[in-house]
Length: 197
Image (tube, rainbow, N blue to C red):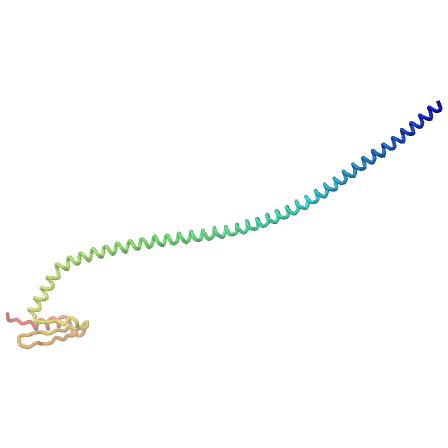
């Protein structure tokens, strides 16, 4: 029994030795796994840091683009306001020009109406003149035959000039109407007409 006890002790010693060996092996295995997990964790952390840097760079780029877009939008808004103001000024000027054009159109129409009226009156005067001119020519010829005076129509204003062809001698006529009365001139001219018919 002592031998059995010794065997049992040796067995337990062996078992505990084996248990210790298993624990070490398990501990080594766990340490290996732990190292693998730490390596993976470090790799993941490096990847996460790289991704974070890339994300921050992308955010910075997007923020810069957004600021540039906002600045462009602000400038565009200012330009739009300026264009709207110019458009309003142009519309006001166009309205002013339209009013001026309407006024000028009315003036032009009035001038055309006046021109048509003048042409109508000229036609009326021409029609009247055609009737009166022969009688005026007849009266002038009749007066010339009776008075025997040939008038100088190119004399200066205020001067009455001509030649009286009397029965024997031609006599010049030279009268200044600014110096002589109309009655005197009329009596003088009638005095030249011969009374023996």
